[in-house]
Amino acid sequence: MPTYEFKCLKCKNKFEISESITKYDPKKIKCPKCGEKKLERIYSGVYVQTSSKS
Ligand SMILES: [Zn+2]
Image (cartoon, rainbow, N blue to C red; front, top):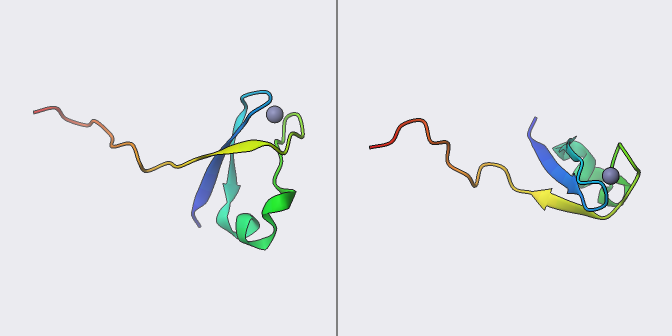
């Protein structure tokens, strides 16, 4: 199951949320550390892993 990565705008904590939760009720997503609901979505997969450099 794919997961979404979020960053808390308050404490800068990064955490992952499973896709099923974001579809179910995105408003219930909050920082597990401080409880802040203002989160920044981090789109993983945008960055290409630099395994080799030519
Ligand atoms: Zn937080």
